[in-house]
Image 1 (cartoon, rainbow over the protein chains, first blue to last red):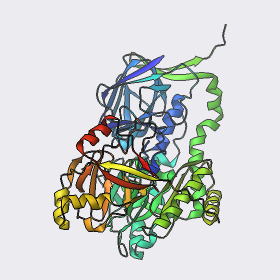
Image 2 (image 1 turned 135 degrees about the horizontal axis):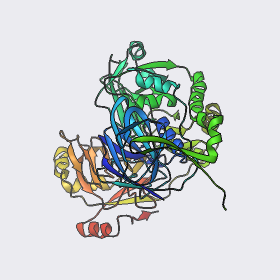
Image 3 (image 1 turned 90 degrees about the horizontal axis):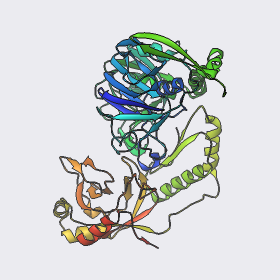
Image 4 (image 1 turned 45 degrees about the vertical axis):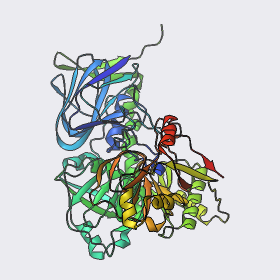
Length: 347
Length: 221
């Protein structure tokens, strides 16, 4: 079967992303990939895709898609009002949609990025260095190396197979933090913490920093109490990981995100732990970020939170039982029905 | 990410050691490592903390740092980059340095440059080795659009724009070679650790190389 979805409105910015591109990091090609890897991974998991399949990242809602060919979809991420044929539906669940169905995302109540996954193998996307992620600057990946536009049609080939209908992860701190206007993210100091004064580092951990509208997929520009350098804010260029917190000469932090450049010459006071990057990716302009200092020996425990979060759906007993059949929500004449599809043996 | 910091200096020996360490780590093909990258003076290992134990990885990297027989793998030969020296700012550079345009070309092309690292944008080489007598300050107002292949001077550095981008460099010429070509099986023309020389060419040669796809380049041994 061919699932086909036409982009009626891409909203502010929609692009194809996956888990990111590592093959060009040593050659100046940005990592790219989903900003909120947790929501992205869940969306693929819920529709039954393999980890790392492409998905659509949608910024700040206002998205509309028209189904041209039967598809199984799921939307995760920001707390956004989602409608199928004008009927309000839940996020983090899968839906079997038919030709003519309309998917709509309205404004985001909390969080800012949604992920739309479609079951199957995507067609006609550009793959570069083992990744489908869109990098607009280098004009690579995704759909012709650009963001999605009205009229684009995305095609995914699939066949009916067992899928999980939903994941039960709503007690995770990720959801609590998304709804909260003050977000605590954990930070490991370094690699250039010695470039800052004691007062500078104290200010960094004491004050909250407000996210400004100058933020994008490259970096989150924050403003708050100035972080003072001892001498120069510059150093000989080194590599920049996802979540590195650069402090340029004005003393205001920039958290480097998916589309960051690979190398740079600003001092970095610390790095946000991978487990908390999805929370950062869902921060809206005007919200506050508080940096919480952690020690190196806590890192393993923090990583295991992330492992637990992602493994939960696989380990849950009731979920594995469904694996012999598939459950979907379908909408007919504005009413929702739970549909159970069981696999039958060959006759 | 785990990084190894060498002395914070632009230095050929440091950079050779950096690249040798990077190559040794790449050759180890450690599970759970997404990428190993290098800059002037650092080697960085991108890893997934859920797949590889940080302590074990750190030990492996440390062992490689202390390895007695550094496995230097020098790029043999020289990469020749043909340049048509007809840049909009070449007169500005000549005036600033008090020399003729021909002399700017001479000094720029009579040097061997080391690629310390690639970064900033896809395939962008950080060269070392420019004759400091042609150093020229950046333009006060950056241009909004600079064509891919443009060769420029910014203060004490020279560089080539691999993709169209804005920038404030003094443009002295352009190369028909594609430093970044995502449609090519080898998308990057250059790599860190290579040595480069610029060769002045005329319009006819520029066109000829462009027409062959901008991927043929000579190597001198």
